[in-house]
Image (cartoon, rainbow, N blue to C red; front, side, top):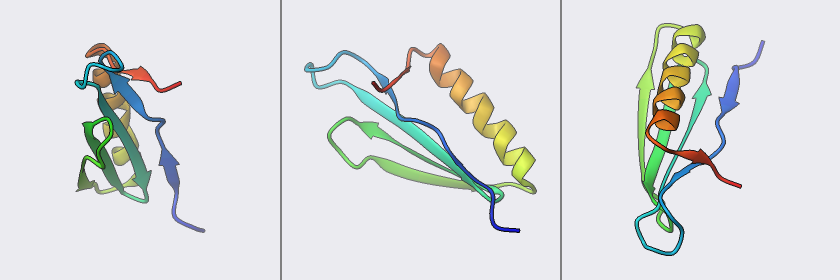
Length: 77
């Protein structure tokens, strides 16, 4: 069996054109989560975190996505 892989869509916070828009996206690959975030128009910063299982990584990612939506991030259209 191959490595289980899932990506979120890109989430955006802020109004376009005022220079303060931020982005956030993440992916689960196997038992690790990689999150990329930063100011729109830049490559941003990447952070990676390892978990004991794919399920633990998925749970962490679901919590982070929920938190970002609560903070006002919206899916990029």
